[in-house]
Image (cartoon, rainbow, N blue to C red):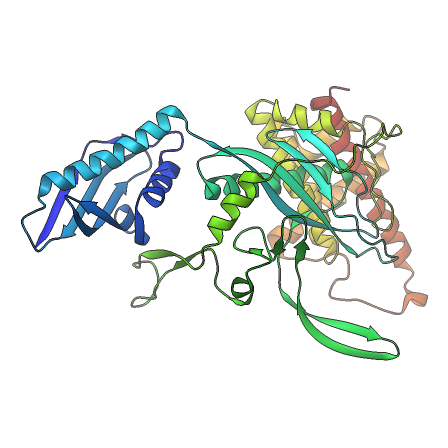
Length: 460
């Protein structure tokens, strides 16, 4: 027979209740299956193996919630004897809720140092390690490897981020999201596009002596220090000594949503562990700590550059980098959100610059608009405010580029001959003039943005 117990006292969704539910269930019971449903009600479902009154049984837990609260927890199990009744289920669920509330009340957290991996494209790597105290204590740790003549040389930058969290999934989630913010903030400071590592199979040209051949390889990174094969910052952190996991296509937590009828909208999503990588990462990042391999001598005086960075040049770290991150962390919420939005747009513009000039310029305008909207002024007014000596010719140039942004986003137009490329450079008289305007616009946008940073973040 099916035995059920329904708990209907409401539980407010505050702080980290949902994260603690996931942690308590997975830590205290053997989870047979889990799923989420978003039909009429939002439901988190677990099937766990537990012991009730000396009987090992499977119990279904259905947690129903809305935006504000958990309003029902339904438990059920199949029994074939009279040794278990509703009171056993009731005490099972009360014990579970007690563990969750006790954990939340005591704010029980574990300290982790999570390492994440980003990349930039520059002929030479960043040369310095930098310890910053922003939202989280973080060591910016470049992988100093090769310097090439080509400006589009991939360089790896690692972040070691100290985080107190409920469990390894919670810690890695925080680190992943914060790393994307770090990428955005650094893009403004250094005028370099930062992006998280993602792995893919690519075709490579291999030259060995006088022979040239094609090979297909997977991109990625090997972190010898931590013993990790890095394909991405989510399920792509793999124990280098675990060849089975390296060879497997499935790893970490995976979500399966079955196709029912004409779509997916009426299907539950099932979550399952494709590997035991969490156990490895739990120990690795719990034992890991921030360690500087070299304590840099006091650097020469380097200010934030208001000119754009060419990717064949060395990346110089401004002396104000620690002050920059410390002051960002202490900004009021509205100012911080506006600057983060601007920084994200600016970072995207630098990433897109490798391929699409119109997209790059459009996002640079958006980066300024995010701050202009915060100050409740127009794009043009913002540029005049933060470049007081802006002449009429530059104002007209900025107005033109603002129209490029509008034409691109609203009409899908491209303004830099992306679809009318010509290799006839000898007769392309407009190319030089267009390039001059292109670089002048970059300089004006960066000058205004850094002037805003100096005034509102660095308090210069």
